[in-house]
Length: 367
Image (cartoon, rainbow, N blue to C red; front, side):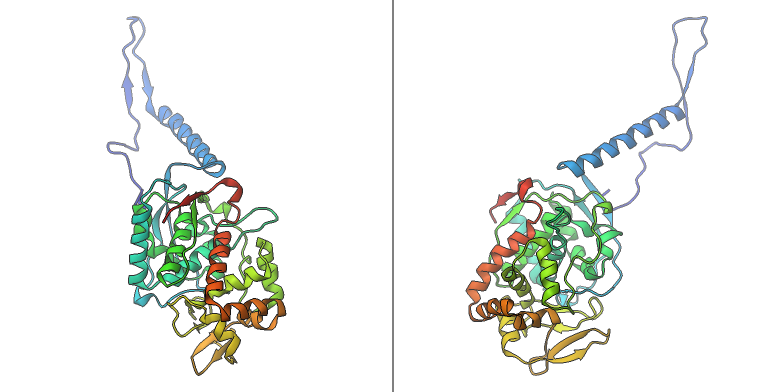
């Protein structure tokens, strides 16, 4: 149900009743059918239909909707956090209805407007990017597992991964919009991140819809597929290489740190990468190439670096972009050319969002 409550059919009872049936032969007593057995057989039939429906949702694009209750994940260490101040909007309970497939004829202009209005009001653009990033960034090219599947909808599985701590905030902010439109969580999260990027002054990212949500948490992947913020270039190549990304792609996608900030209660890291964390530009690259940072340890015990003059931070993965020769040449390029960064980001971010869906066919959406 839309409210996540258990509902009982009107007039139903836990007791069985008997129904008298007239039988023509006068010598034969009228028989009584015990509806308890009818209920048993009906229940078996319903279970079978539900099982078939679940299999259909896995193998194809189901048209039915389903509701899922949510519980906030434990606030374990978030290794690659992109989030926002959220303007005091607080945590919203993760209770929303999620479709398993998107109606491609939905009102995309209306959806974009609702998303843009909410993102501006709540100043939550960065966490929308992080939500979609962490959904899609679990992809593994070797076995075509992971990718954007709306996997954080459940109490179990990926919602409990340390890297996803705090993303219940983003899902909660999308609750009303999710219930208003016939769209899968994976498509909504991806589209919301594109709208958020544009709202904050970033490039318009081409969007294609048609991602289905996994029907249950058994479709979640193991923890550890997202980058660890306290590791260097070899780790970045391992994580991004698993998805099929190049050195340039790694630098481009890291540029999303030009917006947002780390929150100590979610990630164990604390601070923003730029002085204007809600403004999309190439300041992230300019900062890590030109500013000096001093090592420090957060209250949670995590290592990071801070520029005291601007009160901004850098993580180990950020500074790796300035010390590794291959990464550095792209970091320098984007520090000097914001247009080149925006163009590369629009192309690479679309690729990230579509990992694993290329062969299944997505539909271009004019927005």
